Length: 129
Image 1 (tube, rainbow, N blue to C red):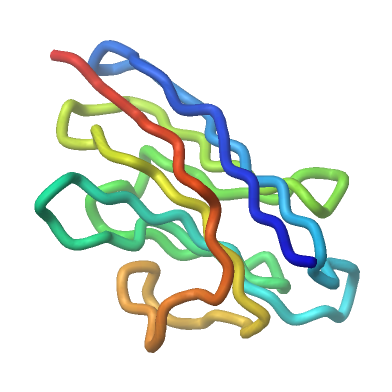
Image 2: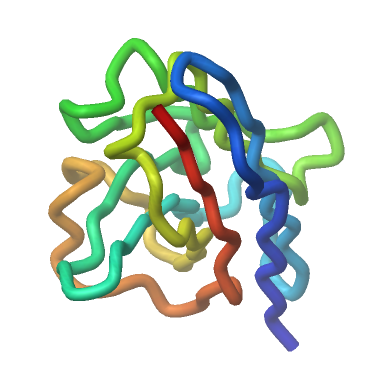
């Protein structure tokens, strides 16, 4: 059974940092496996936005608004993925979702051809000015 558990959200002031975590189970995440893990965010009343992706080869992609500030990475346990968010801005405030998919993504983080298969429950990030 696939489980995607995202966590780590909170409230910070502008310029601060947060690290989101995403623990995935039920996937084959070992060497030679094919997968893609992505972080998305959504503000009420707006469309969900793809923020960052990492594939099984370790290749990463970011949407333009977070380049140089956010970093997506894979943990040593190979089952936990992170989104390190630095220099946060009020416009980064949103519900953030981790998602996983058995495809190996090589597309822009904000332009998935079809939505990821498995989703976390979301974690709220609030950045105050």
